[in-house]
Length: 317
Image (cartoon, rainbow, N blue to C red; front, side, top):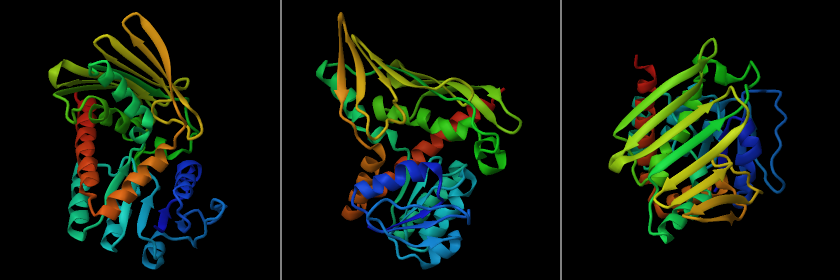
């Protein structure tokens, strides 16, 4: 499947392009608004270069568009791509509002096209292994404790610009709002408490959240861009605790070590290296090939609704 990439972000260079090449994609067109950008395709991959997003959408013969621009332009570009008949994958957050997400989902349904949000971490096999560990023990997770926080970014990074869709809530809350469906088999919490704990001039830079799910299950998380690097998840249940480092951005070439504690027994389970981006794209390509991609759009909308609820909780007095 030929792909058109809108935006030549660091993420696109480091993870998206190699993942597509790993899946055998050999044609990738790239549109970049940075005219001086030195664009490099993976070995064996060819494609056209465009300096304008609209021109790329009008001229490219790709089947799927990947939107990897600043957050504030995601919805507009995704809408244009759907209107012109492309399947569409959008970096998270797909939209800045649940209303915009609803509009895109309806448009994708009307056009018979795939619409998916690239919250890819959950496609890494480590999450399947965590679920297996609990299942083999006859247990289920009841508590999640997450930390995803990193040092401040360069001052000109778009994440510090409100007009560009910056801020830690839009950038990092997608990791929080998706964990319930990934590990607790519950897409919607009963309650959300969220507090912004640090701010920059225009945006919030760190927040903490507590979600309560049906059956007394819960998630507590700390997210931000003001601390030393931490990327960790603890999954707790009766008699079982699994600890994961690099939980939300596992490198494609690094085996992941799961720390497992079961009653008085402690062990390490190694999950072989895997590319979560490649696994995500594989699932998208397979859904398109089967003509069964509606669930991807429904998941996008459900996650958008939870992100909206979390942001409203953060704004509450």
